[in-house]
Length: 144
Image 1: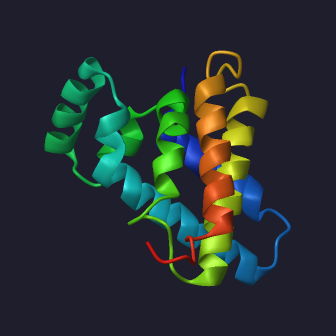
Image 2: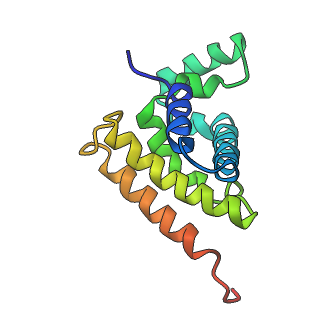
């Protein structure tokens, strides 16, 4: 059975927090909450037509977490670059750094766990790496 994003994120958070200090684990949990909020607000943009229809049915059944129950690993991977852009990029420096690092690790983890075919998802991986690099550099300090 193919895991949904809710299951994937739970496994990733558990693996990420394993052996970490409490403060680090809390930041990771905050990033997880922000990612889930983002997916519920914008995840539909990364679904095919059949999944969008299924999402509507799932939302009628239970609204909270519907997108995370419909999305799969490939959908998640394609959604990651936008998670590192406004308005989703966190403003608190510690949380922002955690968000960027966790997003990068999540993309790699999806491939290492063989939840996505890294050969077929190469473009999504490149887009995620570019978004990570851009987010790490921060906003351009030069005036427009």
